[in-house]
Image (cartoon, rainbow, N blue to C red; front, side, top):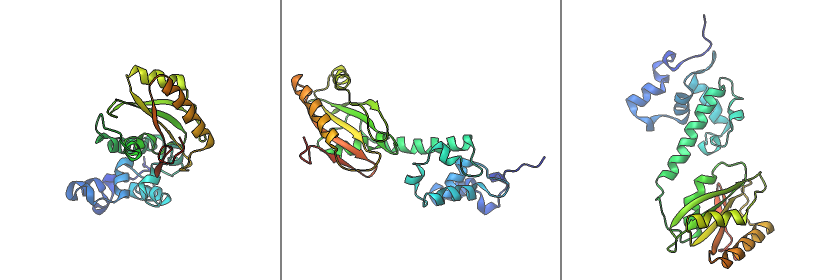
Length: 230
């Protein structure tokens, strides 16, 4: 029975990315070749490298944009079924997690940039808003990075009671509020400022101050403290 897929083993010697990696090292493979190894096989008319190249072309050969594709997006490509799409997403997720592995377990947060560098991978590629809080010690060491809520593309709920319950559970002395803007807009809304002030007022009452509220996007951050908004 004729198989309508072209496996890596059937390719010409020069087109075998696995063998090329063994001979020349992983750094000498193109993005298409690396992705082809993940895909494993192509279609009746296209090799896995060609399928991979087609996917990357739609992303301008940009791995950041590739990471934005969903399971449904990937399955639109000829030769990419659910299993292969899941494999691609799994590899991309491993890469995202690896970028956060070098972060010290209890780093010190002295500036909004410190905060951004510490949490940016938690928000990377999200298409919905999430609200998090960093619980800090008296010396500003991170005691916990807590997910409070998930919302839609334009908002999420910041429950003050839940925030401070979580902070008290880890014996935090102060905190940093965090949420993302999937739209990429680096600016605090009127509601962002209002929520920050409300939570900060409650924090003062129990001697657990809110030090800042940092808005995160894939391309940067906005500190309400640094911009005089709270």
